Length: 145
Image (cartoon, rainbow, N blue to C red; front, side):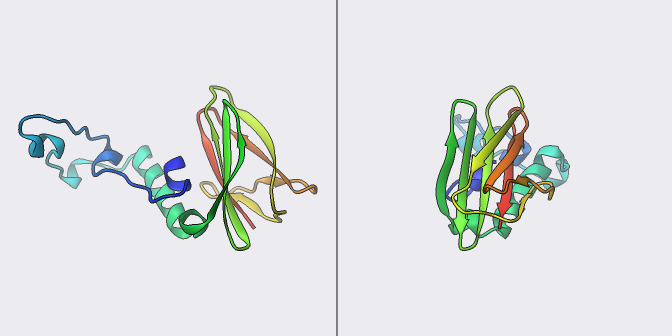
């Protein structure tokens, strides 16, 4: 998730989305880039997840050219904004083995917040804060307007 929301161009090495392993050896060209026939591989939960992240990145200019602003960081949670004009994308990453609920103060008050992966609304408070639930070892990508 961070790969598609942090500044920079997301890069997947060919075959990485199918968990193909590249190896180094004497015949490096053959081993590093094994023959790949797309028909051998069927989309699965992981490839669908990567496709959804790529779609979100492509449809939200904040993730391509937006300003980066760190919102929260501790040993469990990392939250940052990508801002572009009147909208923003908030990413919350949970590195803990337990689910986390966090209330964050936003630098600009938003009136709409929804999860870009699920389209579910996310709670905003009257004070301009956002309440985010994040599953263990998971993340959220939230559009703010």
